[in-house]
Image (cartoon, rainbow, N blue to C red; front, side, top):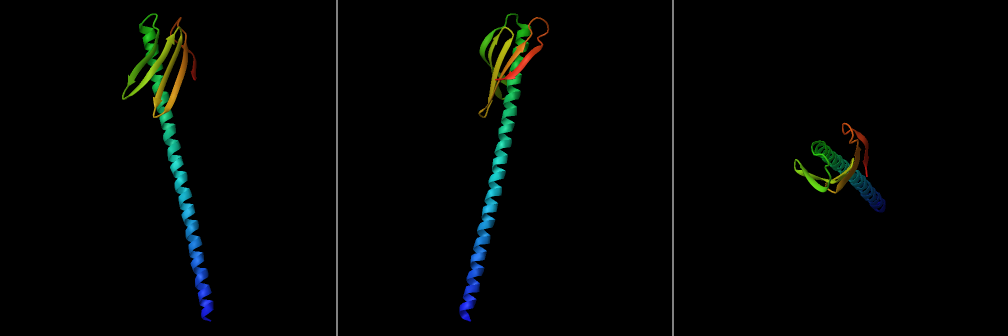
Length: 126
């Protein structure tokens, strides 16, 4: 009779250990997935910021083309707020800019029509 009580206690102990392990695995898995989701959202935010910064450099380059006849330059840093983007090159109607925000890099190549109103012919991320 006493032997049977020990077996019941052993089964209950093993069941409790197995359930605890299952709960720990589920908790760690859910925690890890939320960590990776947070990281992906942060990377998307950095990419959006670098895109906006590279676009700001395009706008600065277009302004300089409009105000300075024959404007041509390469590797010109432009400070926008607390960040910096670079006008990589301006030659003819082709503008190339780049921006880096926390290792999220955006490079743009914009072709504008120099004959009339600097209208954008093409806008590509390279």
